[in-house]
Every structure is written in C-alpha cells, then in structure tokens.
Amino acid sequence: QTVGIDIALLDSHMPIMSGREMYDLMNKDSQLSKIPVIFITSEGSSESIKMLFKSGVRYIHKPFTPELLHETVVAVLEEKYESSV
Image (cartoon, rainbow, N blue to C red; front, side, top):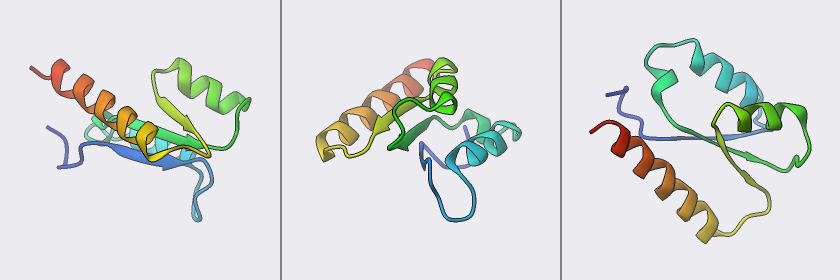
C-alpha cells in the first residue's frame, strides 16, 4: 500500500512547480512512485507529454468532459487494484 493516496491528478501548469517536476519528485520516493498518475494538459505535442505517455502515464487533454475524467480515473484505479491482487 502507498501512503493512503489512490491516484494523483497532475496539471502540466501548476503554481509552484510543473506537473512534470512533481511527477519526477514522486518517482524519486519509494512510496509515492507507486501512486498512479493522470496528467492533465492543454499541450498536445509537447515532448515531455510524449515521454510521460511512453512511460505509461495516462493523460487527459484539456478541455475535457466530466465523463472522460471519470472513465479515466476508474480505468486507472481498476488497473491499480487488479495488479495488487
């Protein structure tokens, strides 16, 4: 189990650090690196987004619908809990 956090939603443009910087920090921590991440971005062709996608991180492009967010969160959590069984 990880520190009681089931999923992290990271925006590419956050006030103190970018979502990519947060993701990199999370990956340096043995507990936080286990938390699945959904990256939210308005950048469609950014190299950093492409690299995150290649590493298995899900992302949602802005603007998005509540239904798309819900479907993505459910899919990621199902993957998380299926792999931990």
